[in-house]
Picture 1: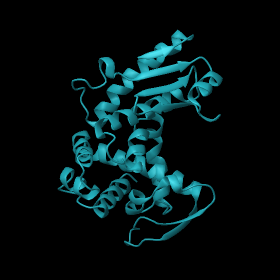
Picture 2 (picture 1 turned 180 degrees about the vertical axis):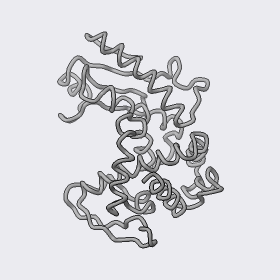
Picture 3 (picture 1 turned 90 degrees about the vertical axis):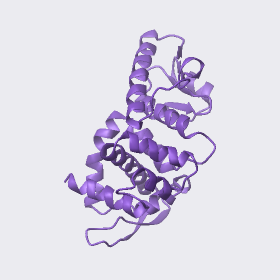
Picture 4 (picture 1 turned 60 degrees about the vertical axis):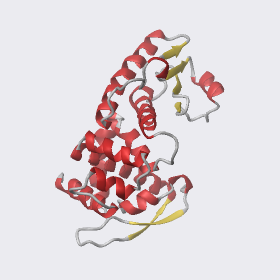
Length: 251
């Protein structure tokens, strides 16, 4: 449901895009449109304010913000013709909402998984992630998957130096990297979407859904991996090895 005050044409474009994104995201994640899922009173509400000033006043967001999602109330808020809203922010926040609908709010969702899913829904991000991943891989800048899944990215900021292990190189060795906070955040987000994209593209949406379902039901990461990908992945080390094999095979 799209609420607007002035620009009906833009609101209609938002509605059309949102419906298309819903179908694509639900298909990618393997979540069917089941009873009471995003229908009737459970539909997402998208509020389009006439300008940035009005949006910021209503949402209380900082000056750089182009839009926001309210997960618990299933709302997305932005303003007409906001930069990147249709192609980036809208699919990103919708993916967060769909994913949260499935995994629920009872437990803490791992940041790498939550942000990886949301970025995978962005058409432009999906196109670029392979190129950026290959560059980081070639230059030994990817982090170990163990460090990524345990990293609290919310505590990383500014120019503070962060020590973090690299992925294993071709000889099976790791390097201890020392990077500033911005570099860590940037690489973390690329790695998150690369990992999610690998699991979905290589093993399919059904297995990814089962993986998420196991996490939702309280399984540990390795238990969920073992259940959903038992023939190839049963540990974080296996996940890293299979992901790297996938990336290196695309060179």
